[in-house]
Image (cartoon, rainbow, N blue to C red; front, side, top):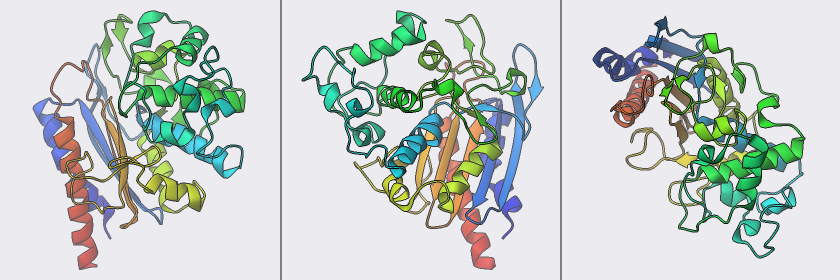
Length: 342
């Protein structure tokens, strides 16, 4: 199987997006369960205020891929170690959650509910507008009377899980140990630029794009992780070959908790970002900055598309959804065609 040819064919939609100026640059990586990989890239890591070429060593702000690569995996590791169970309430490790109301709904939330986005919490809140002291903002998250609503994909769920990890490890998230080529503290000079932030008054490069994660000290359970293409591929392989989690935890990330969600991840559904030709066993996740990772367990194949589509501004139409879908469908078509010829 020639993965180099497959990745070049699957990169064509990204090449078109770069040529049209929809995105500055992109890098696509494929990896199989036995460790074979291929990577293809093109474009710019930065176009303003100076220009810099993208390379295989470029670090990307992974945005909400933090939720699956770091937070979900770390929580499930604690489950594998027997320190918690998925159905324990968060108050087992955060006893001061809504501590002034012992009957508060937040005190009943479980790790499973937060990981699968099956809570009453809102999607997002501009916490950074309330101040920039990380400890005060953490206290605010824990004590706020959150407005209630139907289950939605919620950053707040993962902020709470991030606080739980800090409590269990005794370390701020930004200081947590990570595998090679993943970090919360990258060298800015090696990073793809994201957005010219009106709030911070500068082009963001090497610091987290997400405003709330920045205000929380640079890292949170929902955002803050940076990685290279090979760092993301290494993580994907650990799930494909079963080395990254126990069989029970691998089953959890592959089992639906709702129509579209598993524990931490999205499961494949018609119209999703991963395209419609992957197997039903595929899981995936995306990041606001233009990142994405998909793992097709049936084929033993994972692919990740990393872009800096918010550079220099999020307020343009990058076409990221059709780009992701077209990429995924080309990955599968080329992979299957190559397998049939082998």
